[in-house]
Picture 1 (cartoon, rainbow, N blue to C red):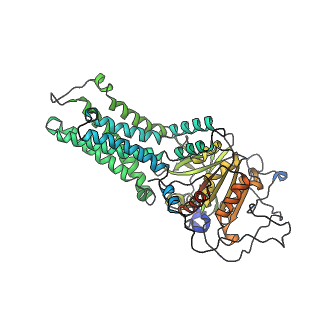
Picture 2: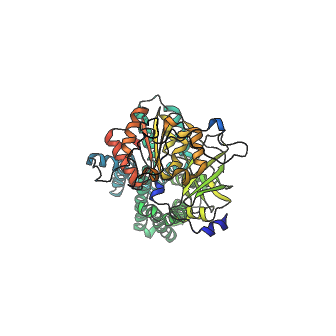
Picture 3: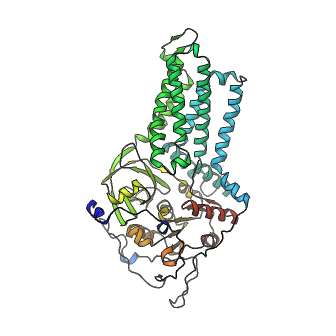
Amino acid sequence: MSSEMTQRGAAPAYDAAERGVLDIHSRPTDLVFPDEKKELSYPKDEKKDLFPKDEKKELSVATVFPVPAKKDSYVAPKPAAKGPKKKVSNWILIKLWYNTYRKLFTICFVINMIGFGFAASGHWPYATRYTGAFAVANFNVALLVRNEIFGRILYLVVNTLFAKWSPLWFRLGCTSVLQHLGGIHSGCNVSGIIWLTLKVVNTYRNHSHEHSAILSVGLLTNVAVIVTAVAAFPWVRNTHHNIFERHHRFVGWTALFLTWGFTIMGDLWDATTGTWAVNGRHLVRQQDFWYVMGMTTWIVLPWICTREVPVDIELPSPKVAIVRFKRGMQQGLLGRISRSAVKEYHAFGIISEGPHAKYHYLICGVQGDFTRSLVNDPPRTLWTRELKFAGVSNTSTLYKRGIRICTGTGIGAALSTCIQSPHWYLIWIGSDQEKTFGPTISGLIHRHIEPERLTLWDSKVRGGRPDTMKILKEVYHSWQAEVIFITSNYVGNSEMMQGCKEAGMPCFGTLWDF
């Protein structure tokens, strides 16, 4: 496999055509008509064909549009015409910007800053005395809400207790909060840094009574957590993923060890006598000790689930790698994979026919060094966390009916929901989908999604991208959907979110948190 990749050269970047957002306005020359049966070939499973001959289903083309029975009278829907983009109201833009993520961030930050103000001004002696505890308590909460196990439990509880029967506004609120838990993570982390800075400043103010080791470790801890936080800024994380991961993870682990040292030394140092009071009972009675213990637990737990597992990689085109793992998965999950045990992990949506299926799949479009290496040098094993984390699609069970719209490789995050639930409608916009993504993905669509709840738009065949809002509005009303989930690139996501909000259609899109 490697030699074959070498002969054909490095994989090209995954361009706009493959993402389904290319604007082309030439006349379509290769339309597939619904009344023409097209015999397709799919890979064979170890035991049986993916589709028995009597169960093969035809791929529906833009089923939202009326299709005459005769080929000669069929007129393909026109691609979206180029022109000035329709402007939405400023109020819509403000609501989209100030989403639940920023609301949760604001709540956490404001509450902390009120307490911080009282502590810094000397009006809250308790907070002044236990400043370190306030810092690590915030870090503890921040790490907890990012913990995969905690997240899965939270999603399970909400999906079990409130599915379908509760008011729609409440279910939408549950989805919004679960999707934007990162706001708590960011809010508590930033607040924790501010509390820690106050703790270090107070320690230096009292330097004549403090041990020099405590002063040094306190300063190093403060610097380490600031570097960890800065590495997670969007402009670092989204444009320099490896730099983000390297600093956020490894400097973060360093900050944890330093926090242990700063906490233990601070608890054991007796400032009044200027001596070390080494007393285990005294140590375990301190609240900051247990907060740091909680931080450590939330960090370690996901890593004990990390395994190196065998994989099969299918290369339907030079721009996509389909990674196959053993065992099935429930819908709405994402998996992290890496060639290394501890670095360069990348998250992808999981495609599976269900928990009892034989396999699950990840679609990796070539966009960077890691995904390009999967095509140029396909590995036989990959490192992954056996415990997967839940994405917004996992809350699809809350709703009676919904729409899952995606572009390009976004099908990886969307397909499982529509495969595992007959109440979800799939809209997939891409370029030359069958050729680009291969027979495995097409086979899963053919086998599990009926034509009446499927709309596919091939931007290469159709001559450009469609009017997505026209499709969404028609399907939303005809399907009687309660919600729309969107997976697209930044531009496509923004356009659809704005259009849905303006049309009064509840929607959730890809999240680029800060």
